[in-house]
Picture 1: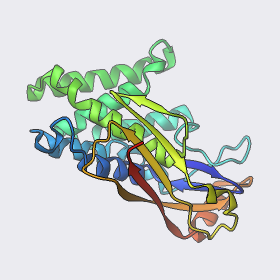
Picture 2: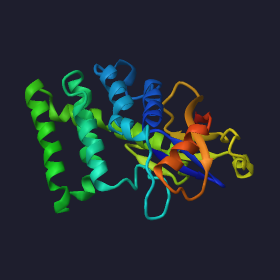
Picture 3: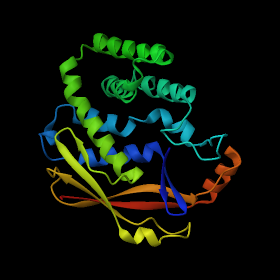
Picture 4: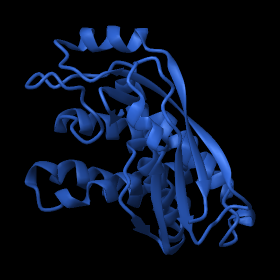
Length: 250
């Protein structure tokens, strides 16, 4: 789950909706030969499913027992995180092997800061073995994987910027991007209000023209929650709303 503070509220975006935005953005990418890329279908599929392991936990979000705050993708307990990524890296190995391989690469890249942590040694070795086995079983080329994974990393980062409402400038894979949140968002207080729009500026601009995409989200009060059930009840009563994100040049 992605959770972004918005005045007295919290905006909730599921990992699937974040990934849908990443895939939709990639589908509109016109530069660097992507429209005729020989593995374009697999790239779009991997972008859409790169966080598939979160599907189950996002349907029943958890709170931190210590402070009553909802867990997001950055605060999830380690053991739960392993469970999530074990699901995500193995779910499609048989049906979509190349896209699944890109998802395994994504797990390794996301958790590379734990390489020297003995607690993470087994899970990182497990993912490395999955990657090696998939490459050998299907004859995939390592250099090809490196080139293709950059699209997953790039659009994941751009989508996270929009969903998390990060406004610092992002520099990645030869592009720079920055999110500009509509100033009217500072006046949005009722939990039922539709979130204010955003503009995600990208340079060099990779689309045929400026466009607006929408991310499904829910808004709930920014308060301490007494239990997972308390959080679930609040989310169940929150209506789904579209967060509009305009993609435009600087």
